[in-house]
Length: 306
Ligand code: PSU
Ligand code: MN
Image 1 (cartoon, rainbow, N blue to C red):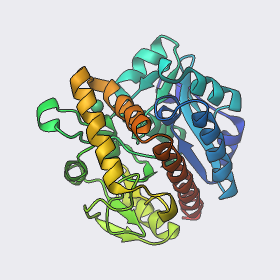
Image 2 (tube, rainbow, N blue to C red):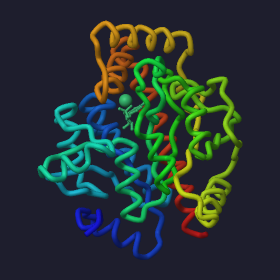
Image 3 (cartoon, protein in one colour):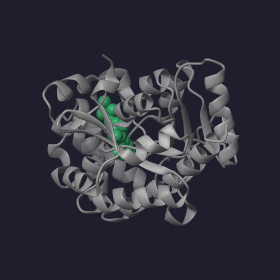
Image 4 (cartoon, helix red, strand yellow):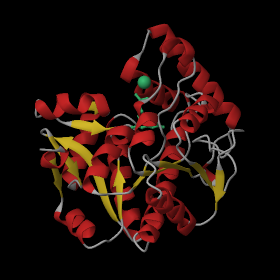
């Protein structure tokens, strides 16, 4: 028995995969732990609409009642969004526990990649990636997302990573693990709320077809693992770097003071930054996700031709 025995696809996703139509996986931790209700549910539903508008079938990934799912009904998205942080945040190590107990889980980038790969979905779009946390030389807090990119053949489109992480160390880790990091229309890894980070990517790409060709070539070469595409937030929604950096510094200080650690760190920091910046960071966050899923759908459409 393998993981597929535990997996349910919606008829629409199953049909798209069987007939070679483009499909884009979407994660659910961003719904339950990454944004407040009701914006999280509105965003998740709008994201599915944008994927369709750009020519692909959306497959929101989660665990419901112990079943791995690719493709959710709107009521299930609403359920995960309403329960928010009461839903278990599920990364690779949490999968067996939640499945064995028949519980619900919101999947991180890592767990979404695992489920997408088993379903046969090659493209996954989200907001931000987990990575090497600032101070990781002491805490060893390095997201399992990075190991998953090293191991699992899924292309991840994101807006880079928030400065709650050490972006330089995150890129070093990905380099060590042999994960290609592409910049979409940029030479730099985007810093989530802002377009620039000062850290260079491996290669700049300027068209969805180019991204698709590189990913397909990676797989044909027999190289294990995934690939990362950093897609900068549209200029008009980018935030002032000084303001967002100050909010992030304050959030990290608060997390340290409260002794937040382990899987709680990222959700805590995300919520704190949103609180400190008022609605501003949430509005930017939503816009960059829309931008990423549109690109993901266009890349998936190109990949389907190769
Ligand atoms: N970064 C964001 N928004 C998010 C996350 C990260 O800007 O919602 C979520 C993603 O699901 C990611 C997870 O996979 O947090 C990483 O958590 P950890 O650092 O505990 O691996
Ligand atoms: Mn961590």
